[in-house]
Image 1: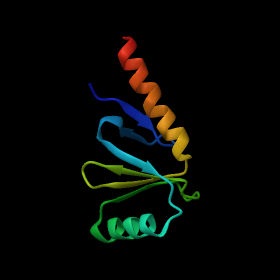
Image 2: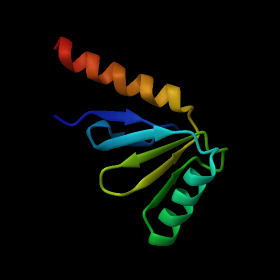
Image 3: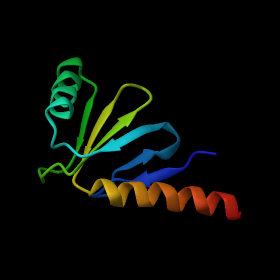
Image 4: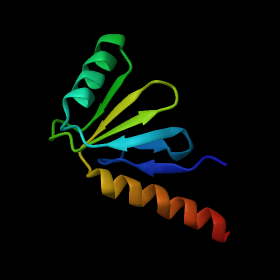
Length: 86
């Protein structure tokens, strides 16, 4: 079953394919974002807002979100809990 997560402004990603959710503040993450931009695998879902979370996918795509990493992680864990209860 595909679990979908809202990463802000109506943008939705597959929770099953998330590898990590990190803050964009560190230099290694900034390099990772630039490398993804150069490769054409960067998806900017911020709508021009400040990037607050960087989501790494198992496909190699890097998604920028204007939502805090804790909020995205909470949405993922809520979906996992919902799936176990059903």
